[in-house]
Image (cartoon, rainbow, N blue to C red):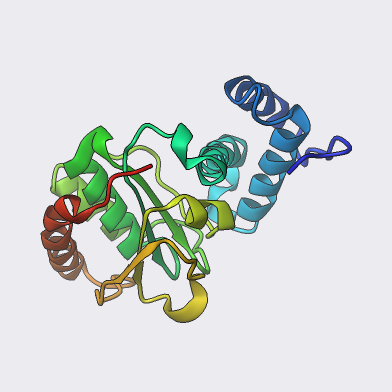
Length: 213
């Protein structure tokens, strides 16, 4: 990912995020590489109108996740041994968000959890957020994210839910497919049923995870 020139930032406010991430990855990635990736993250998220209000903040968060994944994919031995799990659905607004939040809640810092969508929506379904809150799951600001190569490459386990062949299958990774109904447009009672079905799977998942590299 070495760069020969500085890419143009689509928003000058991204410069502060570039500086922070460049310091975090000093000695591994150049400032140009960080700037290119944060600009790309911004552009990928910019098509979703619902996140425009906080787009600069979300672009930095998205770029930070991608840089961490890229570092792990390039040198798995540099990790801290925690398994990495990626949940993928079509819109990253329902099932994958539910599953990721539930696993992070149950496993705590013992597992690195990510989620993404093959065709991301503009916002997480409000009933999904309500169902998680009612279950006592603490939520940071969650937002739909597109699936990127480095996040797939970094994952030890990839769990798909309804995205079919759109998720790339890479050798050396464990893939599971969970046949879970899509909560899109469903009433809160149905979303809670989907949450509970996922939670039953999540409860058993940590004991089956391989050790991270």
